[in-house]
Image (cartoon, rainbow, N blue to C red; front, side, top):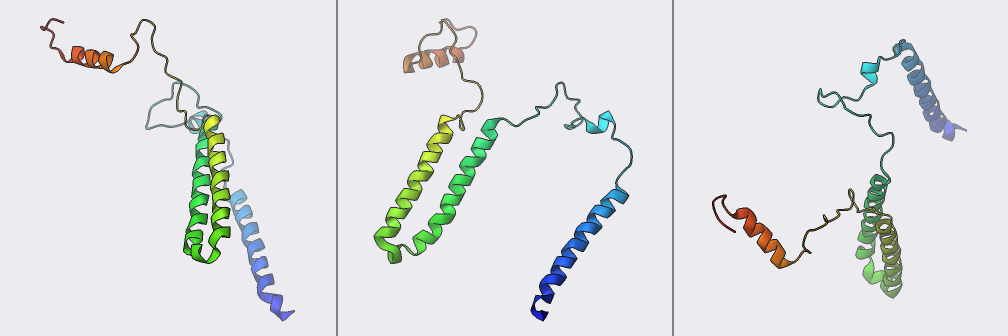
Length: 150
């Protein structure tokens, strides 16, 4: 039983800290409700003109999933690279399967619009189709001074 004493002491200290934290937050917390001014979003002293969105767009979570997927892939590839010669063909097949799964998940995220930022751009009606000639004429027309003829 003496071997479990450090574990019991640690568990007791953890429970005591939790109880102390909850009790002190109840005793020290302000008693009144915050005002509307304190609940309003604050951005560098500028009064907001519209309500903040209640939810993050799904695109935010998709980009974070891409980050996590590639972060995990890199974490697993470092040890694999260190022991590559020891695991030979089996290790190569396993990392190819792993990379294929990561690639499929990346394609899934792209198909759900993870890398699409903002609304799609629509060309205005009546504009000539984009080509190198139209771009050159548009740029050269913009560089003319007001007194030059076209």
